[in-house]
Image (cartoon, one colour):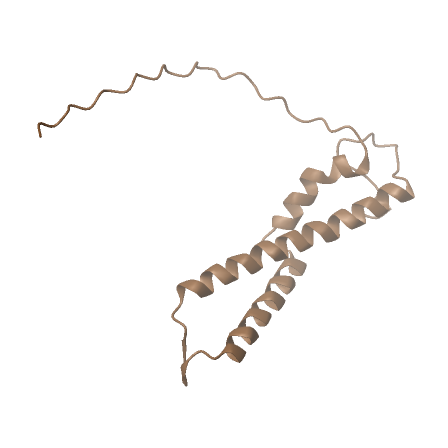
Length: 129
């Protein structure tokens, strides 16, 4: 039995059907792609904060395009390695829903201390004109 054969929260003696295994494989790919997209967006925002100057002066369009393509490839490889764990967390949270088994989600407990009442806003004093 492989890692896709059991779903957390499912009964221990219930193996997954072929459809469920296929759905979980698709979930794994989708979670990995989502992590890649997130990391790529992170790289783009980081690159915006750096000055756009290269050794030869202002960054050319070709160099900018190459940098974007390199960042996308790096994001894909980082997501495949699972180093950040974002895809793994997404996959764990969506696993029961995709496999078609009821998820035993923890119920939100009532707060032990009721929230403090909010004071009404204090009116601002009008300035003399």
